[in-house]
Amino acid sequence: MQRHGQLIGIGTEAIAEYKALHAAAWPQVLETITACNIRNYSIFLKEPENLLFAYFEYVGEDFDTDMARMAADPVTQQWWDRCKPLQRPLDTRADGEWWAELNEVFHHD
Image (cartoon, rainbow, N blue to C red; front, side, top):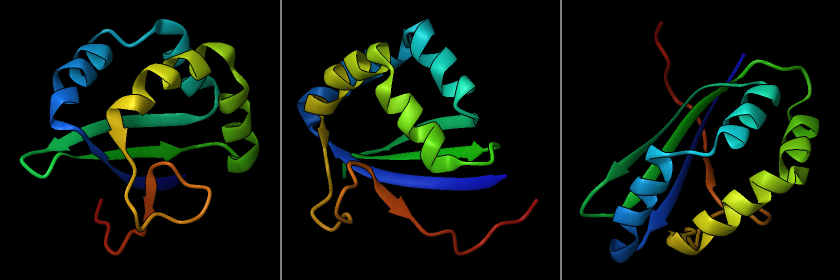
């Protein structure tokens, strides 16, 4: 199992809409997340900095293939089209990233 943390900004004016979207997340998007071996997926909001922190556990064997499969799903693409305009990617993210990947520095079970 791999643990992943990600960070992105969100506009102040977008917070209510983002929360509403995720309070009624589309079932097919959730099914795709599960089918792509993602478990224990959470998104947290830090105000007033307006940062979203995502955490998930990957339980598959080929992360890149599973993420490509998720990205190819038409319903997931529609979901992202709704969410992306609300998000503010960090200027310091790596090339090719939307959400900035975080490096784990400590874990305790």
